[in-house]
Length: 259
Image (tube, rainbow, N blue to C red; front, side, top):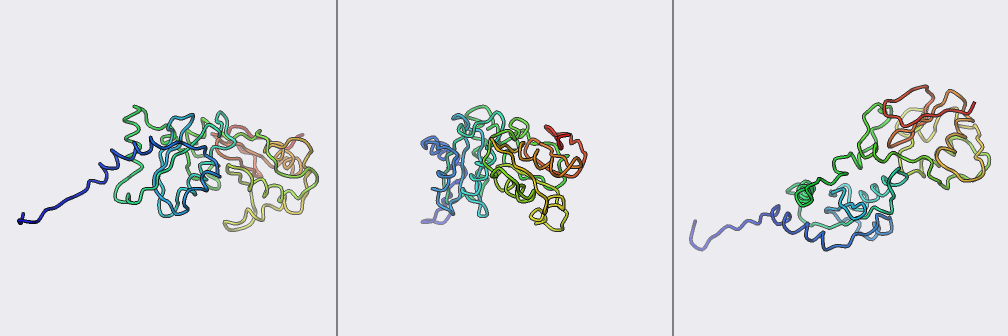
């Protein structure tokens, strides 16, 4: 090596491994609520932790396409209306990291927290946060998170004013309101066919009863109006409404119009 010349290399991965978990430890977790998520700078990217009753259950990272707000808001919705899971018990920590594209930050943190706790964060191996599998893929095996915490269609919601409404209008409102996927059969072409629904929904009315409302009660009223050929099926992570008579391997339950 020439005199007066040297080479210095910073091992970013080793530095992150030794420093970032300690930095996370110094942060206070806050509830996984939209008002806290909204306070994070819009374009901020980095790593985050989800905690359940103070225990780390999920390690995630953001990228250029999806920052903290997008990912944490998605997780916020994903823990709502789930059996055996109180959203109030879920909190998060987020750290903006300005240089991390050259190595897998998420994997590094998972490995480090697994080493410290001798247990991998449980939601990282459960399919938590997976994308909706899409139309007519209901025969796929459900994610472990969804099996442990299936959607709760008996949770009280404030959806539709009691009275007579077009069926499609009610289903559109329900689709917009629910924190989990709700899909129904549509008879039009294209990805936006759900906006037009099915002929049995358009221009046909249903009665929304008075009293407390749940996803179950609204769907039951819709089924009663559409007739016995329609079936509502509850799967671990979503609800579907199709004109069919089908039993799905992973279904939690299915119901039809009252006789």
